[in-house]
Length: 96
Image 1 (cartoon, rainbow, N blue to C red):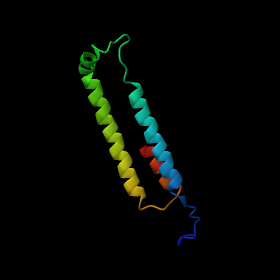
Image 2: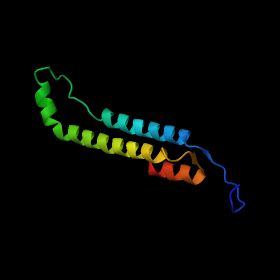
Image 3: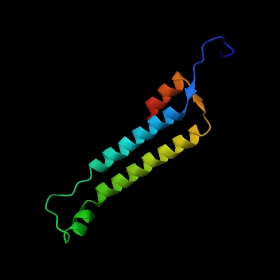
Image 4: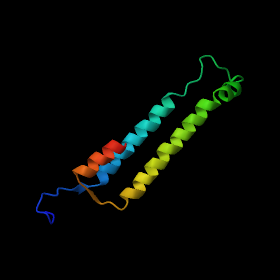
């Protein structure tokens, strides 16, 4: 119990971190599913097709980096947090 006399149920933060890892992995996977080459591209045409889709590739790289930075920041924050309560779980869920 805490000082106020209420029930302060807490849990290890490991499952919360694992959940966030999974959410980030799904987000990155969904990003890569959007990258598609046109059907019937030969090896000789590949450099031209990649150059034509460079905007889409850069958007993927930027999105990957943003998600990666958020994931790293989350891990850095939770390296200091050993236990979480229901409020922290909801806040983490809403921030994913």
